[in-house]
Length: 234
Image 1: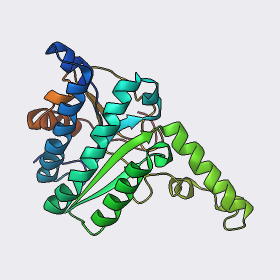
Image 2: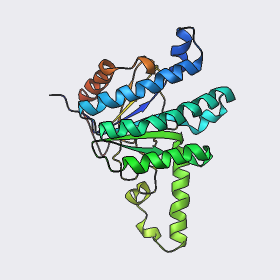
Image 3: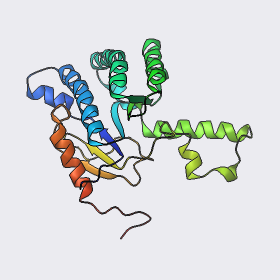
Image 4: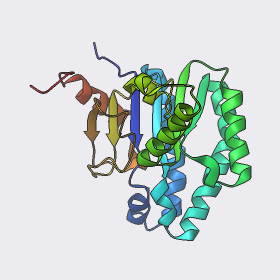
């Protein structure tokens, strides 16, 4: 019997190359990739995965051409509008990781509303990393923790790994069991660096818009074929 990981994190890579291979602009790939996120959410939930976290927009993505960034923001705004219906249909709680203060006020409000409305659902947990970078997340966490130390809310002696984890964007969410990155790249790209300390990694050449149920099963099978060890090397 195949063991299903509780939490799967995915780096959604290859939208632009997928579009180029079809003679289409990059934004066509991003739209297709967004549609695939909904499909994989549904598939993951039916497989028994409890948490799915996707890397949608990194802190480094702001350096892309302005036209591409603008299209990604429009795409995210459109997704937030439809995601409330998807969340209700799938009993899905949605949380956004990252610093949303750089986003437009309208998008920030859409995010807050989506998180509030979906907080009542408990069937599946979907996290979207948006304007997210792991180093930025840890810096923000340290600043919040330092402020609490200065205010006397915690002491230096109370600073543990568990305490620090509570200041991260993922507080209350278990660390990923499995990380998947599509498109053949084999790097973490500043994604969940703290949380992936003991995760299994799976890299595939498949571009994100082509990543389907069969590919997700392959990733889970590879996860099952590895012997999980903790507490050291052997």
